[in-house]
Amino acid sequence: MDSGIKKHIAKFFFLYFNQYAFNVLIWAFLTLFLLNEGASAETIGIVFAVSTVCALCGGLILGRVGDRVRGSALVLFVHTGLFISSIFMYAFKALPFILLAFYAASIFFSPLDIALDSWAVGSRPEFGRYYGLMRSGISIGYSIFAFVAGFTIVRYGYRSMFFCAMVIAGIQLIYITVLFVLDKGNGPIIIKKDKDTDDNRGKKRNTLSGVRKILQIKQYRHLVIIGLLIYSASKFSEIYTPYYIADSGGGVTQAAILSCVGGALDVPFYWLSPFLLKKLKLRQIVAVSSAAAFIRTGVLALTHSSQAAIYTSVFASMQYATFYPAMRYYVNKIVPENLAVSAQALITVLAFNFSSIFVSLFGGKLVDLFGINIAFLFVSGMAFVALALLVSGVLLKDEIKASTLEIK
Image 1 (tube, rainbow, N blue to C red):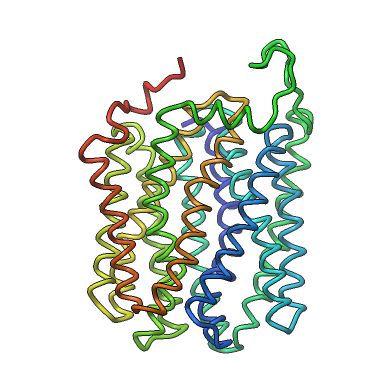
Image 2: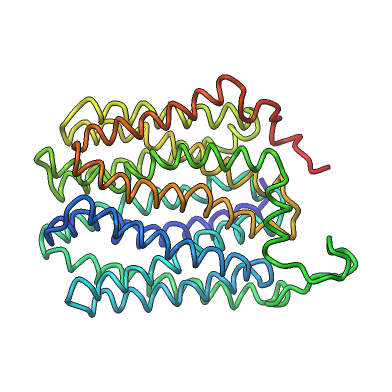
């Protein structure tokens, strides 16, 4: 590994570290915050569903912009919006206005993730192999700030998490501004496409034509289907595990321990991702992720204790930290370079956002009607379907190793 790659990894490690410090301060404890405000499971689901719709809109619009501007410029723009949103979340006192600011943050956070991923892996092809190492900063930041957030909320109340998020967002904005100034020397902010090399030979390419081209790729469609199933289980766990903890007699302390342990357990799986991407086929990696999701949600369906949620977090880490780097890496490998950001945004919309809306709305209703255990049993079944489709060879049957995958 040369010094240039090491510097690149270090730079983005700290970007991811700070980015998901903000994430844990808001999203990880929002369910408990809403429960403290008297919200039902269905109401919580609606809040997260609206948040996902906002993220979907932001991802679609700014994902397309990302094809035309440098990654550093897009990251700077969306993080400015995130910082402003965090100021209003702290400034507002009434719950409806806090939620409006939260929805604004959601608009910017989804494309921020896409833009940062594209910036991290898009400048040189070999950077994609080390994506997991860079993204491990997420887990370390998540783990550390989960402890900080839990301690702060217990001591100063729920509103303190909004203040901490505002401070973290401000620090991140300063860091990104410095990187943006340094990155300006690497080329123009606006990326102009050569008409002679454009697929449409001089015709203006629009969003729908780009989407059609992306969806013509069989491996991409398979990734979307598997992502829908796996991420439904993952997102339900993310939203309703704090509810599960509260329902079984736990509280902020147990939720903080869960986030802290979960973040720490993500790290070794992210560090293993370069090895997995080199040695295993995509279908094998995704099968491991599906099995982990099935085990985690299945155990929570059959038990009712905060300890079970904490102990099974190793499977949540295995599920997410194996699937996510593989998905991002393979999407960049199987789509044309000029559609890479749009492809990343599209799979985020189709696999992540749609599944999030579904489990937020339907999951909350399911919890209110039948209880949290039955709801976990349902999403466990979705993970099992994903595993069965992979093991039977229905999906990704002909996939090959990332080291030899090429676009024909």
